[in-house]
Amino acid sequence: GQQVMQIPQYQHVQEGEDFTTYCNSSTTLSNIQWYKQRPGGHPVFLIQLVKSGEVKKQKRLTFQFGEAKKNSSLHITATQTTDVGTYFCAGLGGSNYKLTFGKGTLLTVNP
Amino acid sequence: DGGITQSPKYLFRKEGQNVTLSCEQNLNHDAMYWYRQDPGQGLRLIYYSQIVNDFQKGDIAEGYSVSREKKESFPLTVTSAQKNPTAFYLCASSTSTGRGEQYFGPGTRLTVT
Image (cartoon, rainbow over all chains, first blue to last red; front, side):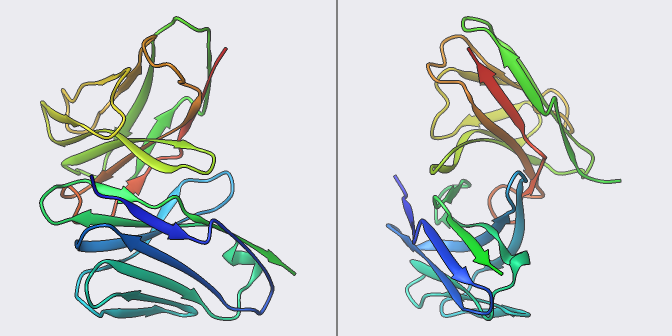
């Protein structure tokens, strides 16, 4: 079945440093979504990427979808303590209706 | 307020008992989902429903059952056959299966001893 691998599992940074998490799928994806889960909370949708090579920005967050639609990344510039949480990617395969989530990257930020 | 509600937030049960987790949405979404979250495991899909009176097994359906008799409700029963039921359970909904953002409820943390 479809697998979505996400690295790193954990990342600890000093406030102001950049952060990147990477997502790789075993199959070509129709779309990829990114979610953020704050400690003790529930996942909240951040963005969806659909097109090959697509790049989207939300303030300090930059999301990319690979040319082959099998990988994606989330980059945060100049992290803040409010960025703390677990970031999940979730991919939709071509022929089914199920999102497959990566295991997430837990980001902690030292003020 | 529109959204998804799950109750209760914390649930404690003895081994061997069935337990039903509630999930209600007033977003008028067709698709609903149940996920299980364990530390370091991400979210794993238990069941999903694309429309009323229809549902499909996800990746880890064994030991669970669901119903979808109303558009706004998608209860999950954790049966005594589920070997390791202690986990954080999340319900979600979306306008269409897979292709739109999923809105998550606050979750129910189930502890079985």
